[in-house]
Image 1: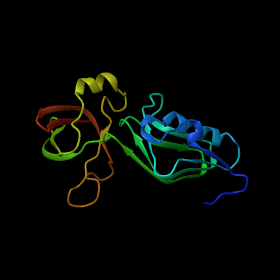
Image 2 (image 1 turned 30 degrees about the vertical axis):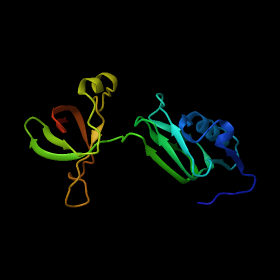
Image 3 (image 1 turned 180 degrees about the horizontal axis):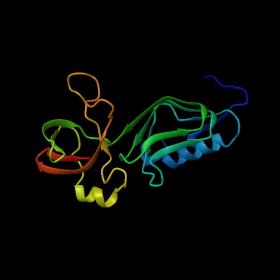
Image 4 (image 1 turned 90 degrees about the horizontal axis):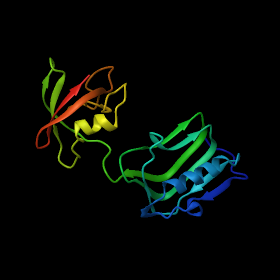
Length: 198
């Protein structure tokens, strides 16, 4: 919905140190501009410079890089710029208990794909696994031991989750289940792996 434009606070990310050259990490500068705008208590807007590429590094204290909590009447205006995540570690933004939040004219992308995809070659129901051939152009999964060492979650194990799509029709493969938790991924040969789920 529209919000009142009078007395709108307009802040520019470059005033907080954002360069937009695609080389320097601008994540902190953009975050500071967003928080300054939200804390103004007035309708506010953060502007990125037209057509620039803003590189964003890692944020290790939160799953989402940018967080808007209890915000109101705020716009992040991209002006046709790109937000480029250096690594597929964080998702873009989390908005909670807020209203009239707008994100406009901004492309969000990753230098490295944050996912992989492939085709199921065979299924072993008794063992709870399937063989997957990773499509060309998509990254191979990380080493299973590394994932379990650095990314263990009691709900989902070392891996996050996978979705199985029907190649013939545009829908999830299993009715009522939108994802499967992955227990392990073991490489068998070039671009073919064994995925164990639970």
